[in-house]
Length: 66
Image 1 (cartoon, helix red, strand yellow):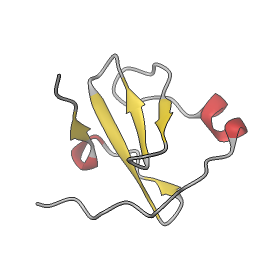
Image 2: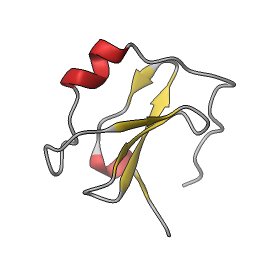
Image 3: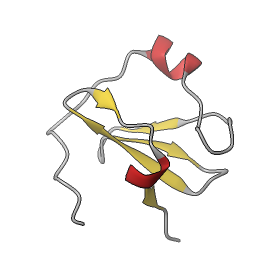
């Protein structure tokens, strides 16, 4: 399944980042604005943001590569 291209820029409310956690590890997430993703370094996953909505489903996440 191919990933849709992210929007040109997506802004996430910083307060939202304070409360969202990775559904796999329950650890913190960082925001990658260029890719419109929330990144869980501990799970090695990136969750897409579509139409301004974070998709926090592990099956929708992209595995990070080195």
